[in-house]
Image (cartoon, rainbow, N blue to C red):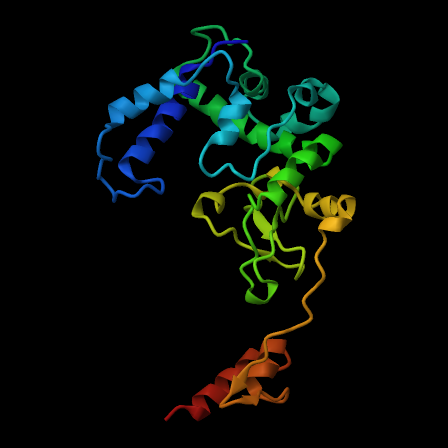
Length: 266
């Protein structure tokens, strides 16, 4: 196993420091250091947890905000066929791959700035590999356990009654859109509840995963709730000919709707 570079250690120490300051979801407010610890102590503790038994993959998947990821088998990553075409999407591709696999990078070959860029490239490369791994039997099994544990959250739609969801991308290409959650009950997508997930690239799960998952594990598919919310005014249902309904359905041009608004105003 290779030795991790300084950027790897710094990232781990940095995450511990943010937790100590209460910036990343802690109980303290901004600038409030948790009692009984300091940023320096936390950083030292984070660095001390790096051992020869830990890997870059396990570290990355354990980071706050990366709960949607599963650990990709190294055998899968080492098979060049599984990585076909990914080099065009990732700068410092070879260094990034070495980082993921904990391979040695000769000391002094990269300066501090380049090490940071390689670390970012490694995260991108791992995400794209992750999207492919999910479509294998091993990947499906790993995500099934997370789905069972409700690791991806629940549908925010009230009538879905807390149905567990699955991560999905709106594009298979990186840097197009962020990850969303797909509800197997209402068959719609939503933004994840946690802000930590709202900046992660959706291509790391892709457009196929949740649907292939439900095709594979059909016993996990819930029966759709046929009940729908019925808007009412003073207890009466809103008729389909009402202006707000027609405008919502797109049957009234926006300009006409604006004219009606002006006529209704005093």
